[in-house]
Image (cartoon, rainbow, N blue to C red; front, side, top):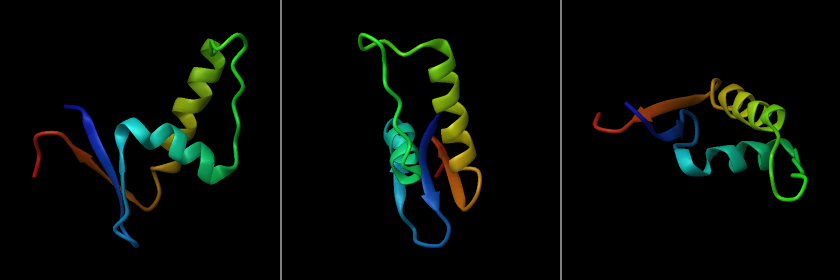
Length: 67
């Protein structure tokens, strides 16, 4: 199954999975700069870990195909 959305349990705000990385980085005030437009493996891992951490708190993960 694939993540569809993240839903905040307090506000009801919904963030689509495809927007989640940028959303989390912006909310945290984090900027990642790619050399020649290409992210390094470490940068990709950092972005993924940051997204997972950010949405692990007050967010419900909504999966595709589950109502």
